[in-house]
Image (cartoon, rainbow, N blue to C red; front, side, top):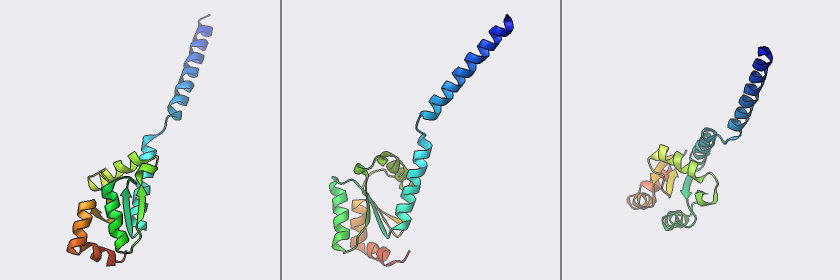
Length: 135
């Protein structure tokens, strides 16, 4: 009789374990999302001459995009408000440059900064030097 009880307890324990394992595996893995966001940011920054992390409605982002438009150069623009992984990308930017705000501008893999930083770099000639650099 005790063997049957032990067998049933073992069977119930196994079923509970399998159910818990299934539940845990069905939750999204935030680490995997962060890794893909990090890979996306790295690829965007280093595969494009100019990368701007932006939000389509942001006036500071519009200002930065206008600067490059007036310089007749076309940046790669990541509109975060149009992406499902915006929060992850902004967390990667926080780790990378110490800010999660937008815009964040990169030229030839080098972080220029936000709107005011980009305007300052334009005014003092640093932006043109960065643009003239080859990757």
